[in-house]
Image (tube, rainbow, N blue to C red; front, side, top):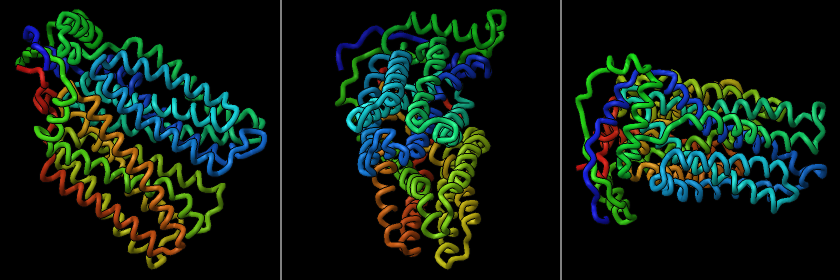
Length: 477
């Protein structure tokens, strides 16, 4: 650390947490939460569009080249999360979520203009970088601006909007990828252009989202932080009601210092090593099970239940609805019953339900409909568990390294869920044996049960607590 600056006393965290829910918070949810919608849209559109990209009137790609482009997207997301996560902690939340949105719009628009595998893979890489960077910047900003009493449910619901994007992507695919509606050479390009169009609207909305006063405070910009805090209160409750807000009872004093990578590593690996282990187990377990089920389920329907390809989107839609309803309906319980109880329960229920489903699957007692309904019911809890995993890693580390911590665990989830799980489950499917596939699901279920136990023993009771109480800033006195 470098020479410390003069200490800055402040009541900003308490003032943010005392605010009633208002139009300001709705602005945050809409303007910043769109990231997960865009990610769901991207993943679903690319999945639907893959076969069309092999058509000679489009890009004429091979199966291997379609897969290669997907790998480029994931690689971009991993690199973008790490690079932009670090910059978000150094340069600010607002600056980075503005930059990453601009990069996303450019990547999405350029993808629509691709002329071959080289350009397509490059532009998918750029788009992935933007999405990876968005996760860090947006999660940080939301957690630091949303009142503590509702932080859990808001975070879960916002993360759950990924499935709204997935649903929109599936419905858009029915229109843009239908040769009876649009010519083949044009439809796929317009499908990629949807994201860029949504981004234009978000540029306007995000213009009104302020920099995090908490971040400004820890970077020595106390006067600016208090000026923005005054503006937030005015927007949230009106100038005439500001005096009627509850009295501020907690204050914090920070002495801004430069935080190097050595301090960050010591904080993660030594000071908060149990929290790091907790985050690793939560993120990796849900990513393995989730992607193993969701990304390979169309193949399961085809191989074991002989469902026609044109009927698969209907089954996927049921998954998407259940995945969104879980965080939406269970989210408030993470703030009332508490993180430890609900995270343990959601992970454990997901694992136990998978074990039960596989017992029936092995003996052939399930139809395509009953198997899908069973998995959809499991995803109701698993989706809440997955969102809670990301909620955990975004609130249990100090403010000065919050975005980078989110990025690190996002990378773990992307690597385990996006790279390992689909390959592993795909290999099991190639055996054409129910027993082999069931082993994969049971491994995923076991990991979820391990995560539930880990949460019970190592979980952090952060519900309704200020972020500074959950993890004291590195610059706090």
